[in-house]
Length: 211
Ligand code: B1M
Image (tube, rainbow, N blue to C red; front, side):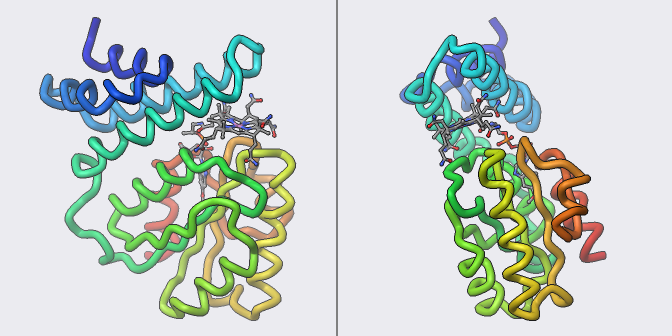
């Protein structure tokens, strides 16, 4: 079994205690860190999602897989992030109000950081007012990213864009949105400046928006 396949199985099986060792093993075997991330971890979480949808596993199993992936990412982080952190400016990011999913948001944060931004991560369940407060605390910030993973929290993306508009900050900052249920059409509808389907394209778009 390849080193990456072992990572896939550890994430799917929620092997929290083994994951750090297995990711390190994959790195030592010469595997590309981005491949470990995309195939070993994101790929494994997608198959967890499909099994959850098919009622083959339940919330506790999903949670343990998510925890496993998070631990694995910590080992990968130094191999992905560039040494030019912060040079492109600040990027405020958070998962919107009512939503506790943070794996995708953390990946976007990681890729944006790798692209040279200083990331200010507000965490999960972030109220629209908290995004606005963070923007006021960081008047030099030109980009904000909001993530939503539930159809029921897509409305909070609109709430976030509206709060930024109401605070008179919309001309100073570009709002990027994303998350599994989000589409370009929805992003246009709520007045966001950009939608990207994944973490890699979020980082490229962020660079494009500040260019
Ligand atoms: Co939840 N969950 N979950 N969950 N969960 C989903 C999202 C779901 C699709 C599962 C399903 O039914 N198949 C479903 C949503 C259905 C819907 O609304 N349409 C769902 C549900 C229903 C729920 C609960 C309501 C379950 C319950 O309690 N009955 C509950 C809600 C809790 C809450 O938020 N209030 C819940 C809870 C949980 C856990 C806590 C157990 C756990 C989260 C742990 C954590 O994040 N720390 C969890 C998980 C792990 C999932 C699945 C399995 C995986 C999500 C994930 O991490 N994917 C998910 C099923 C699935 O997605 N297949 C599911 C991997 C990640 C890398 O992808 O987050 O999509 P993703 O991020 C991608 C892109 O979307 C994009 O880039 C990322 C990487 O390329 N992206 C952006 C994300 N944010 C972006 C921002 C950007 C740009 C791109 O710009 C700013």
